[in-house]
Length: 403
Image 1 (tube, rainbow, N blue to C red):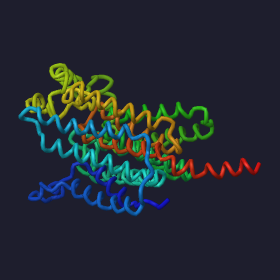
Image 2 (cartoon, helix red, strand yellow):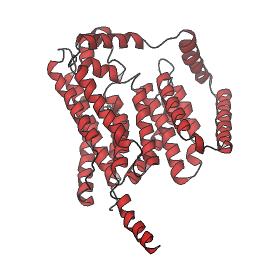
Image 3 (cartoon, rainbow, N blue to C red):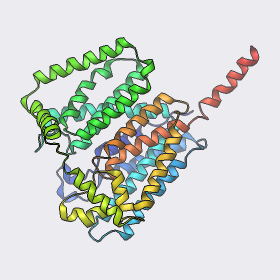
Image 4 (cartoon, helix red, strand yellow):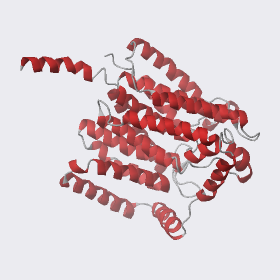
């Protein structure tokens, strides 16, 4: 097997992490029309095509039904622009969906070449990104208007995803190398995640963490568990007593006063109720691409429903929900069991599920790109069996004959 190029993965991860980045954000207002996502993705595709050409013809993978269903879902979303309201932002939304579709395909075919190398390299990049984002948020950008931390112009809800993915990446690096150094950085990631003030992101990360612990509960040993708990508690105490007042005041206001005492949910329930009403009013094919903004958000200053499933229901109706459900179910069947590399597939699945849960509380279609990316990588890791299992089968047969 020829080794895959790492350059496509580097470019693709930079595009995925960078979000919507135009040159006006870099201080060039006259070049606001230049979307660096398009430029970067074009370069990544060129390098990926070269990689695929050198790599040679890939073995046929028999379980790509999820990918076909996903592409049909994306194409339906794009086609729904035909019946979208006049005020809908069809152009930018279509660009987002096209880029999302290409990113999903690119990550999948890049990972097929060598899932072990591709996924481990991706986790390494996210580990580094989480460190850079955390340090930039704490020491450069500082708290925003609401006292919440983020970095490089992105929102806190996107920032928390990078940090929790950093934790998953640290675990993946530890499982591969058996070195504790990556795990020692996780308190920084957790601190940054708390400083984001994203309650939904923290709950999604906690849910994935608890599910992972429950799955491996029989293999856990008391010593390492107690050591890890003691380390996190000690780190938390040190941070709490040595942190500036802005850190502790954010925790008290955001998580104690607003969440527990005032039960403040950032108007999410009202936004979700409006999306549900729209889904009921347009039950078959929805209100069309960006229909929520075109009918409701444009008047109420709300960009999107802040719930991926409700957005699909409101703008794609039962057809959109059916296509999404079909894609997710087929994907779940594909990654079930993990294929030839269950641990690696499981880590990618954990990352995808975390982003999916987070997308139920914040973000639009493009903000959920990390779900589709890790879902594609997990599927690629699960389906590539012909180059690992059959290669060892003849050796086992010879050993059996010799015995």
